[in-house]
Amino acid sequence: MSRIPDFVGEIIVVDDGSTDRTSEVARKYNKVALIKLERNMGKGRALFEGIKSACGDIVVFILLVACKTPSVREGDTQG
Image: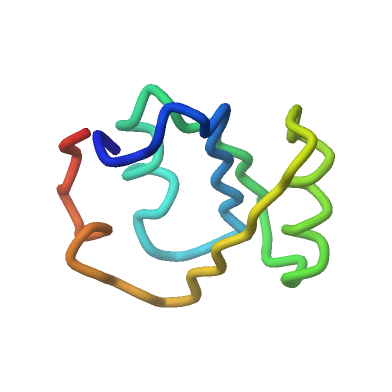
């Protein structure tokens, strides 16, 4: 999270009923707003909920589906 540019006003994570630790990891970051859907409602609903919550004029999406990268590893809470 320390690499997020200053011009980024908010980060919204939508957990669409995942069975992994998405919500648990997202909660560790102060800069992240978490929207947790109780069950999987599909990509369209997840995007809708994120847009509805967004405050900015520009919205950028990064879709992660069962993806682990070096910067989004279990227990990686630096930032």
